[in-house]
Length: 458
Image 1 (cartoon, helix red, strand yellow):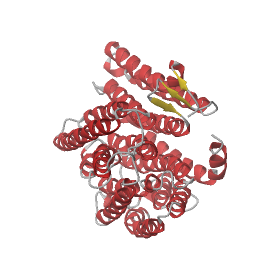
Image 2 (image 1 turned 30 degrees about the vertical axis):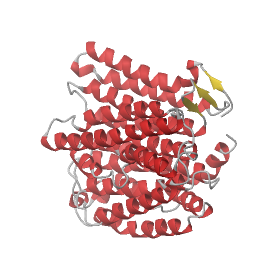
Image 3 (image 1 turned 120 degrees about the vertical axis):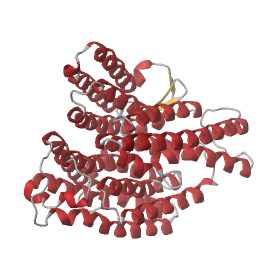
């Protein structure tokens, strides 16, 4: 960080997203039900503007905005990734929420939760981090129960109760950290008594592990993913994780002491292993993807384990969150396009819609880490970072889990090519998003060398 600043334009991407949400809500109050699509356009423009502003910000020097928000490469990558992912999901939501009396609220809640995810990544003060946690969570709770059916209500309740409970624990950790250091600004706890510092770390981790869906705070993920509308499931398994992982990395480098590394390493092992084992026998594709996101969270914890010990940790994390976001959205977009949740419902999809079947194959193999997809490069970077940081055993466990994950993804891929008529109806808008996401995953993987080279100077 090269300096302090109190210029609101340093927060232009965040201000654009906030303005889009507020303007969309106001316009939605006066627009007839059948014409609320204009709010989707407004929110899309705001997200596109945030992406442009975030890209421009990468060319500037790092600053600390208002002594509480870091504007640096991790924040800018989060801005681009979150805004891009949210834009794709807004397009998906435009087909699902069309003509709903609460269509405006869908887009507004998506933008507010996306804003919270960005602030999670850039926060450099524990109180700002807590506020971002709430902003990223509360709109998502409302979205999870948006359909107002039994499954959605149950999903939203489980999501909310776990988030509230672990959020209180995190707030207790903030209180303890303040008592030990005398400030809520990010600073090391290494000078504090080891027992007290370790307790503060565990409490702070509680909220972060909830947002990333890692063990032992993962219980909400499969139920919320299955019970929420498919578009909402796409969002809650993608966008909040981006900001939470980058925020965790920042906490690891600026707040936590050395006592946290073995703890997070064990959590990473438990998360990737449990996610893979639980996914093996799933016949519901949404629950399969839910446990897949849990296993991906285990891999994404590796850069946090070696933060400050390997120069590869930061680029590995930033590339992985972008690769994961694109690939996960592509897989969920196929679910939205088909509108069915059982593995058997995808039998014959290659005959019914070859491009959509191919997009699903690319995304699923991408989540495994198959070349030349983006997640393949990301996993190589993550494994190399763990090895370079002195955690070779953790890299080995991650490789074994990656190989094991092939089998449950194949359980979904094989029915695509079996004889059958395929799903009766396919939503064309969602299908186009799925194909575009699959293409982006391949493009990012093929251009990974260029992307990493461009970002490294900053």
